[in-house]
Image (tube, rainbow, N blue to C red; front, side):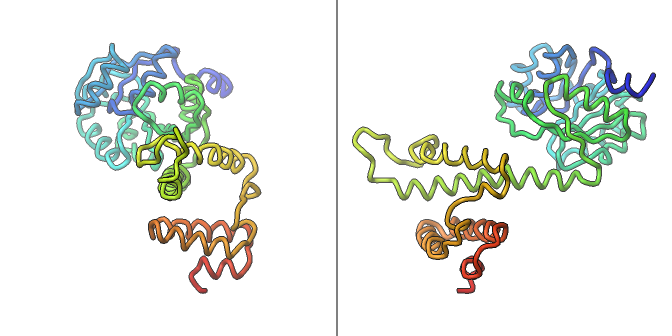
Length: 308
């Protein structure tokens, strides 16, 4: 078989798949793989929520203990939290439930294939395939996989080809991540996605204080429930800012920091401090980083560093 043949068709047309465990990620990927002809023959589920999720999203899949799941499949998908992965791998290796030649895939963003070494030593083919998206536990997760990128890491070129093929089958975009770069890859994703949520929630909280009590006749009252007036005010602005940042990079930065308006930034810090000192601290830290990126005026840097 030539290398081009491996790249074009590295995986069997239909694989029997086992999933540990039936969480949001595992069931979403399992459902996506079933849609393209693979068969999820077994999955593990312990909590009531995971059992219900398996029964709903993978209704024809048998629910079994993890070791039995591993013994019944050609592709074993380990979709457990990062902190649980090493322990799960060690346990499966101790039971020798993974047969030689089994494709073993984990979905952890922080780990490469090194964490699978106990199973690799038994003859498994290790791969890390991480979907760079958040999961809600609902049907839209599977649909969103078709527009997501996946960070893939493998032990060799055949492994990369198989991982690439699996991702392409479900409509995703595979992106190669070196083993030694997995932690940095994961840190970048966490920094962008997790801190974006904190930033938005803080902005919403401050805006609610600014808008509450002055609603127009017939307008929805401003309260602490999500998807309200504050969110609708911020939504188009945030969407445009994110789109501009992704398409234009640092040039997308606007506002008082980009203009070097020290007086406006000082006022912002004062009024945010009145609402919540923690929000003001977040504004100060991000404004300082923005000022550093734009090479802002020294007087603004001094304010943000607390030197004036």
